[in-house]
Length: 270
Image 1 (cartoon, rainbow, N blue to C red):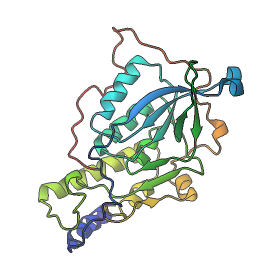
Image 2 (image 1 turned 120 degrees about the horizontal axis):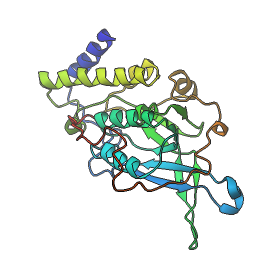
Image 3 (image 1 turned 120 degrees about the vertical axis):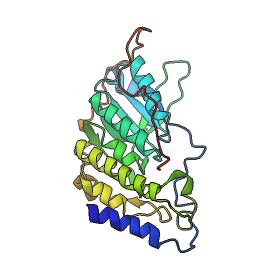
């Protein structure tokens, strides 16, 4: 692994050849909406009846505010054992790892999907799930936070190398200090530890580190998703989506439900 990391750093140094980064293939989180967490009830009501399921949608970029927002959501909702349906372009490395560990502490199930809110006609808002959604960049590692995980065949999981946030657009032309290269090694080590801790395969990180930011993101094939243990369930029938679980509001005196209330310090990796 050490030799592989050294090779990645050497690749970054040897590729300062003046080829401009393609903005279409580099995830740019500038101005991206921070991930939102919302409860949803399955619908239409006449289709699922008393067996309508509930889930929490997690939509948007993982920013330095995301872990704090999740902590606030968890403090006011009963999310223990709930299912988190993710649709995200990725984002902050440090925040993603903190959020993934919080998800595991709540014994949640993670899956990839797009939540489609249905017209309510004045009734209780209902929603349905579409498996045609994307989980990109650090979102793949966030997915590992689930105690149980499921990636639908129609979903897209894409990965690429982490990079300094302020140098994404000119990655091959930029110069890098020794401190910045040190941050590369530190944060790759943090992701490696997290991946093993969550029960994922280190092959996931190795695959991501082969794709520089000036190349299109690499979409994992179904067999890779299974081999890297991004999915632990064979079918969506195994996901209960929190059947009949109702969200609840905590009292103002309720303690914070996780350790994420501290400010997340992020060097800008994305």
